Length: 298
Image (tube, rainbow, N blue to C red; front, side, top):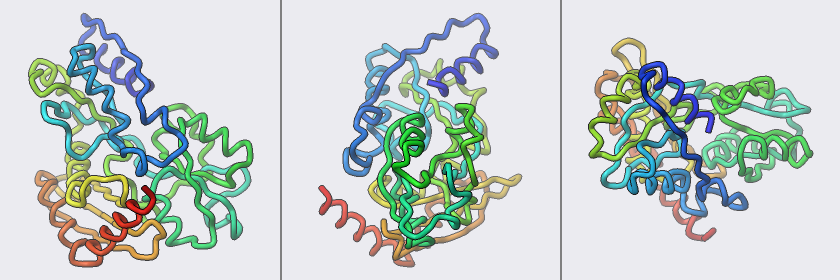
């Protein structure tokens, strides 16, 4: 809802003559909280109902956390704009400890992300990692009740909701490489709405759009699934893009990683290039292992 209101405010400045209404919706991704996303249908659970509303013309467009948008959109839909990225980092949140390094052996860390799980397990095998679902208030509430010694959240969400004081430490990309699209918002429309495409175009942030295109290309090359711990993070400096990517087993025991640079105006090519480098490592075997584990869980 914060994201929808944020976009409404930006559009109101651009088009003060327009009336912009918010159609509040609760998705299945919001409702199913007792299982990880990888076991109940993936990130698409956060966007499907919104796409139905667009298809039925009950809504003109939808505002998403890009991290929650499937790597391949359904036929007839497209992303009209990607807004300037907020802080892409993961955040360490705890009432009693200052950092992951300060946690004692056996301490319970909560996260909803297989990516975060794998990265924490690889660096801190002495910690216990348990699933954590729900909105921000629910997750923080579970921490405050003592169910977890610490939890890992997206810094962007905490900052947007006015809770930066809950962040005890930021996990830099070298420690915890972000997920594709993390910290970015995107606006989805029906592909036939050329009028909306033109109206929303001023909200598009070119450097962010280039970066997330590269990141999502990496994910798409590996099936675009949240059932595998995959990270991809791009930064743009002038005409140059740096792209880092990682794929791992959920226990963090096997990791393939790569770091490449290329032209910022060819993000898909760089994304495909770094995916090829990962495949030259153990990525194919890691991917097969993850799918085997997922089938066993199901």
